[in-house]
Image (cartoon, rainbow, N blue to C red; front, side):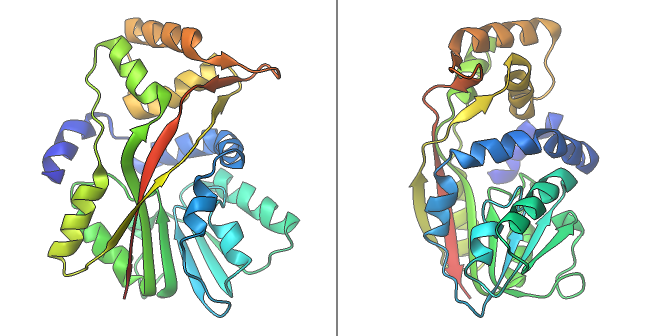
Length: 264
């Protein structure tokens, strides 16, 4: 079932080079979002850490997990495909006087566990597990990188305001996939009895301008025709709320992220 879904959605999947460029371009925006999002706090409240432990943060982004983890754990390995994300992480770590974070500018798919990286006490893959068809192999690799605990977050439902509205304006179907159902069952087939908890979050999607909002939509929608882009832009222009500082905010963004975790 998972493979069937991916077969229908991979027609506009970018290659790694395009993915890196996309995240480099949106790094500052992503960092801004994390400052006003309660997701990182809710996640870190549930991650078990001890002072002598190590943590591997797969797809670390700008450090929403790595920075608070480094304040609790002995050492943190922060891995991401985006050099701009890692640049922000390093700057924030320096401001916090943290010297126990090792940054790796690598794609997780290119990492060989036991060669490029040793197993860590805790592995976190926060919203970074790809939508590749062979999700079992991806989960097996993540599991092999942990000696203690594994924490993965995937889409669990809820809603980002533009996720449903823009496709509707374009006449496209909206599929609210609850990914945790597939992950839980695949893990069960692997002999891993995982725990599942839903994190109901209040996210503020804030944009500098309409162009930035459009670029964000294109990430999830893929390439748009000239007519579709005009329609999407008109929808966003009507829907986005202009703040006092001139920035634009998407209303009613309350996603649900599913936390899937297990002990080795």
